[in-house]
Length: 504
Image (cartoon, rainbow, N blue to C red):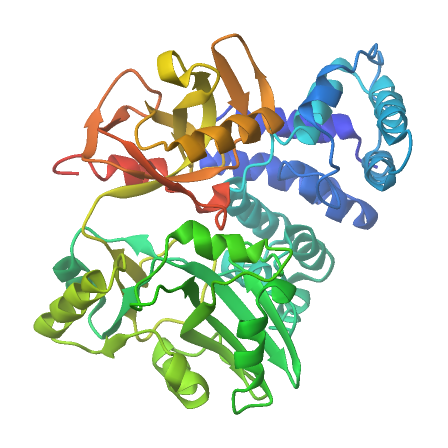
């Protein structure tokens, strides 16, 4: 039986090293010790997540808890899972006090180190999607299976604990049982940035070049008349996008899984602001903006899974089932054709193009080089770490953002700069309220927040700097928009930021 103290010790060991190999080794060592019934909960805890998902406990509740710690470790992983599950179910009259009592009872059985771990876990401070890559490698090492097999199973299941359970209980045969299941979203394949269009074309050879829309990622599943629509974070939005459901239900097929983007257009056919598209995803009532889908991949068609097929085959299936709704693009273009498409994308108000290897299978996880995005300006998706209270006209608002890049080795985001530029009055209102809801601490000057909000930053470039731990700093950074469709696991890495150094 593994105790919570064992998880805390492994987590501390991971946090104390910058070596990806050492992190992987520490996690794998603990995974090997787990009993079968402990695997799912322990995997979640090691990844910095609560078993079963968030518990709905705010910082104000957690910061008010004062409980004397236990002197000896005795909490089991199963007991933690059960206690958190109990907190999650508390609702109704007097729920605040009952939730406090349940949390106090849990913390009273925890040592000081365990209390600190649990409080950070409940507050979301340990939730770091960047650790997923390390966890995948650790699961593979512990189960003595190939990393790619674990990564593929994770892509198809979307659940790291379930993937770990299969790997540790049944090895590669159990992992091979994961398949694309209609109605269960799979993790999306991502593109990495390329410096120029010519560089991307030269790197990939036979490729497709497509518009990169200023829209929101969607994944649609159809099985007969049943249709489901999911965001890039695998959240279901079916009931909010009736026009997309109707369109997919009208396609000439029995079953299909499509990957693409959607956006609202103005009367001239140009994209409306990104926020208007995202507003539809959370709308509780009918809105005027209609969403238009643009599909760029087909992962399943009429009983046949296509994720392992080359992109060229998937595009043929896409043309067959949804040709009228394909994203604009060209196959195997000349440099001149690709440049013309790039100019066309910009002329229509889009972001640029994506260049894709026609031989590549569909693979989620690390941003590989099979898909390369090309944009005319420098932008980065960074994680908000904290914000400073403003002064003058911005007094009373949280304004100056502390920005972090993702650590690809699973550590916390690495600070690379600050900015208060580009913030509208509307954004100042929103982030002041939102940051206080997500606060994990602070003082009269700075409020620290759970590192989960992603913001798109436009910048002139980066420069070397000893001011920040990553050794680089943003130059003339300004806020373009927040990205509620992305989580911290999809933020740009410190390697991507350093790669923007002149000559880098």
